[in-house]
Length: 112
Length: 112
Image (cartoon, rainbow over all chains, first blue to last red; front, side, top):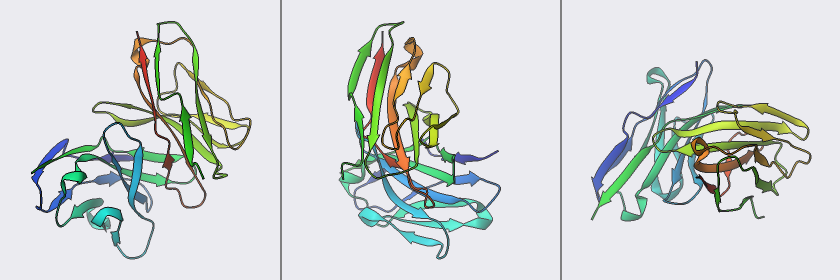
C-alpha cells in the first residue's frame, strides 16, 4: 500500500540554523513527490516537486529537496532558516489520475 | 486567475443540519478533490473527480456527497452534520499530466 511517513511531528530550530525535514514513502512505481507548506490559518502552498531527472530539486523560499530512490526518501532542506519559515510542512506522493497521499506533517518552530 | 476559491471561510452548524461547501476553479483543471484536515492526521481525501460527471470516493467519504456538473465547480454536501465532521476542509484541483495540486484557502467548519 502506498504511504508517506514524516517521522518528526515537531521540530524546533534557531533562526539562521540549517533545517532538514524527513520524508519517506512507500510506492510501487516511480513516484511524483511534493513538499507543501501551510502557514497558520492558510491553505497549502507548493514548495517544490520532483517528477524525474536531477534528484536535487530547488524550490521557492530557498528550499531544496533530494530524491533518494535507494532510501525511498525525499528530505527537505534549507541552509539558513528564517523566522518566517515557521509553519507546517507536508510531504506528498502522487500519481495520475487519482492517487495523492499526504504525510501527517511536521510543525516547525523557529527560535529567534 | 482567481485559482481555487472556497466559500464560506467559516461555518457553524448544529448537529443534523445540512449544508454545502462551495468550491470553484478557473484554471480548467479536470481533476478536483476535497480533503479534510484534522490535527495530527494530515489531509485525508474525502471525494474526488476526474472530470465533469465523474466522481469517486476517497479515504473518508461517509457523510459527504459530491457532484460535478461543470469543470469549474465541485461542491461538497454534508447531509446531516455530526460533531465528528468538525474540521478544516480544503478543495484542490490539478491539471494532467503534471499532478501537483492547487489548494483553496479552506473552510473551517464547527458542528455543535
